[in-house]
Amino acid sequence: MSNPTASVPDRVTLTEGYSGRLTGRLTGERWTVGPARLTKISVGEMDNNVYVIESPAAGEALLVDAANDAPQLVQHLRDRVPGVKEVLTTHLHADHWIGLAETVTALGLTTIASPGDAESIDVPTDRFVSHGDEITVGDLRLEVVGLRGHTPDGVGLILRTEEGTHLFPGDSLFPGGPGKTRSPGEFATLMDDLESRVFAVLDDDVKVHPGHGDDTTIGEERPKLGEWRARGW
View 1 (cartoon, rainbow, N blue to C red):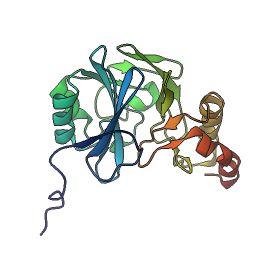
View 2: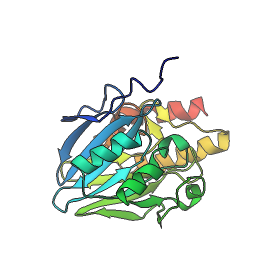
View 3: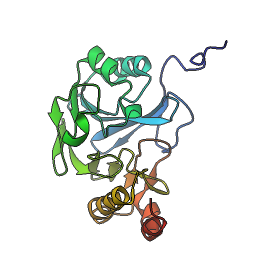
View 4: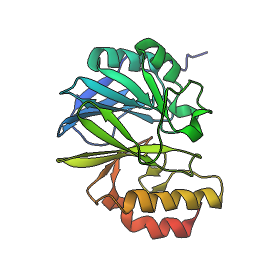
């Protein structure tokens, strides 16, 4: 019988520069936006995106979703991001924290999650954050945005710099629509949060870095809001 993990790369392959589209498992790209250095890495069989938000000036970094492939992720962080101190889990779905326990143990990270989702994450949460809170990474200020509906208490992050604003919405927003919901009520809640907390406050040029797959922009998705509402959950 063939080994299903035989084709998994043994390390992260990183390129410099931004496209928003990765080419396969454990591929990534890193780019600079003002005072921030951002990294996007694809992990696992579900094409989960792991993000690293760094402040090079302070030598500090935040990991967003230790989703999978923990051995390779840990090695990458040790080699390339020794200043990583904390990890935010955007929501309770297990594909976004499969690698969390191993990563936290190996690197001694502080864990961050929302109060409403934390009990379903199999690693204790050290710090709770909710809509309107702020996470500091060196000289960077990351706004916490609550995005309920895909899960009861999902959270994302907004990074604002003079060279552009970036949204990390977890699985709450993708190219082509909101994340999956299980009922009309959950869908309405997610749409309400997206419209009031994302589209009402962010400009069209804001880049969106979702929990799986390719990136998009607020401007690309804004014209589709009415279509999403009509389509329903």
